[in-house]
Length: 182
Picture 1 (cartoon, rainbow, N blue to C red):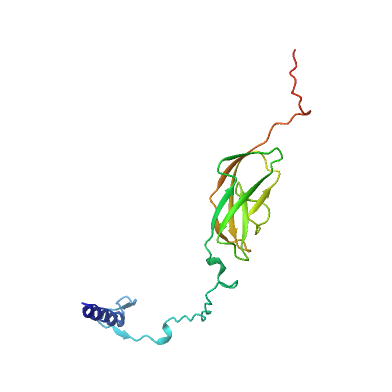
Picture 2: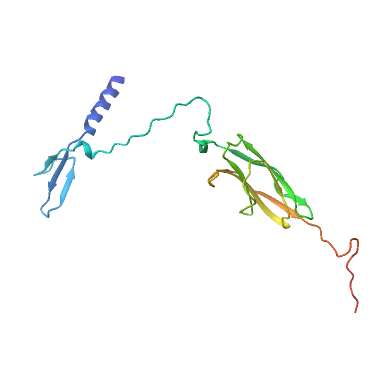
């Protein structure tokens, strides 16, 4: 059985190196084919018509990842640990913290970028704790991305929806608005 497969593969390899024929039809058009036609000439391909690509030699793998090794090959897992999905945050100043879990640990040149409602919040950073200040009340979508220093996105967390509530404030503490009677 193996002998038949080997002979079949050898036959296919020999046929793959087919002869190329060139001929000109009655309208003067030049044609090329691997099948001989009337008045066809065998075309000999010169060695310089073939493309040859040489790759630089590969660096020896030392068994551990160096800082110069392809850092973009790391596959990160990101999860927003807090606040929870659809959490209601009550803060009159609009301040809260967001904590991210990253696996594996960030490579030296990779950063975490926080996006709220599709807009970058602050500068990308190495810390997994983001402190947000003076955020407007309402619903917000949060997402964290691992980025390179030139901005290429390597991984993203799932979007997290939160609600920020702020209590209504009156002019005088403890005073209720009055209603005028006509």
